[in-house]
Image 1 (cartoon, rainbow, N blue to C red):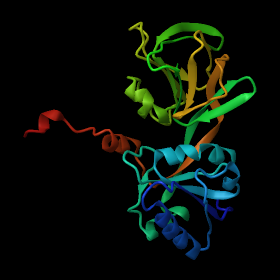
Image 2: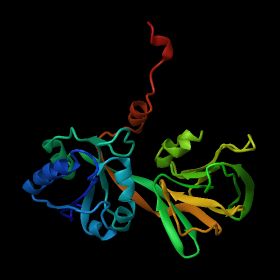
Image 3: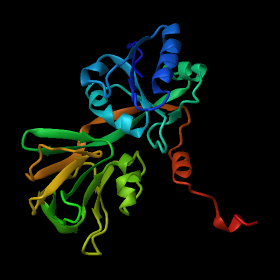
Image 4: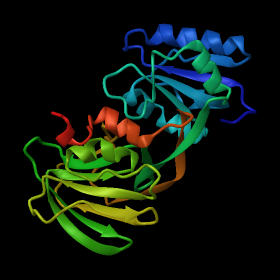
Length: 278
């Protein structure tokens, strides 16, 4: 974290039980060791609330972290995620964090910064960022999506099915994984395209390097663009460009943080099944 900055922003999902009380406890701890703390009364906070923040302590869950993306990217503020939800892939910490642990982390005594890639989608003059994924689907529950995909100007294929997912390495453990896409290590400089229930069974997931620029031309008019679970209402089926953004998002992690430990814990990976009954 930037040692020259002294402000800690608390982004609090007030719909989560105990979120506000946890924010007040941690802010008290931070103030006692000389930090300026701002507990934003709005959720999500405005982008300008992230200005001059040493970090943003997002209290709620992965959805809370996603709501902080634009502000954190714009002002280069690392996100410190505390999970009060159920799964919490990105929110490393829980409400069991002690005052002493919190103090050690915000003073960089027991923490490290992890950088994650994000995607950018653009149509016309509009641009949007996604930490997990962009998805294109039919606007009707039984509708079919037909779309042509080009990579750096070269025709890839026409995809017909329930939709398309464009996932960052971070997002490959979310919607992409549920749709049968690959898990990708977060440090890999790639992104994935996964077809949802394709009508052509050979339409498997594709992995592109971070320099690839995709263009998607949707052929049916009743389609929607989804950014990290939120519909982008301004998109009206214009040709869509998707690429890895030059910007990144940063996360505050405990020292020794293990991506594979998170996967084992959150996805319920076990050991050798032959040993289960021994």
